[in-house]
Length: 108
Length: 115
Image (cartoon, rainbow over all chains, first blue to last red; front, side, top):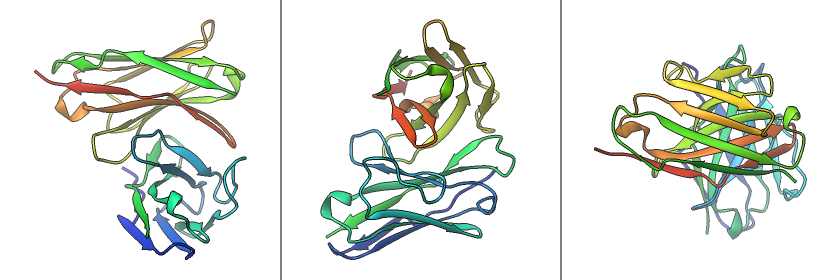
């Protein structure tokens, strides 16, 4: 079945830019979504439809997609951005959803 | 503001059926896709399936044979049943509603499968 691949971890210093990638064969045709999950909490949507930001999400969060790779960028990462980040999309036919394996972002 | 409240049995024996229900408060029930997602302890998110207000469903291929989802529009509720559970089904189960930029999650239900 369809898979989305993320790096297990990304580490940056406060104020630096963090980039988290998500690769999948159907991404040229299907939107990517990004969720942030802090320890012990339910996930929160931070990017939808590749690059759109929901209301209330800081501007430092941005998304892009090119070919088979989607990217979540956190510009000027802050300590409070430390969390697990998951990409989500669907198979090429839109028959089912899939999450990436998750990326632990460390900011220190 | 949409709120989701979920409930169901938290401890099951192998071979039993997991049953969870999620009630939706606020918003327009018909506008959203209603989804079930689970997360085993210490692991990542797994998409289980999705249902809309008409009862149209989509399920993960790996769980499709064991998953039943239903919707009750008169009560603004949707439900999940997962049959023949094993220890591998032990996880936090979340209900979720999404519509464009809007995305809301239930509080989660920890389901443990143990003999």
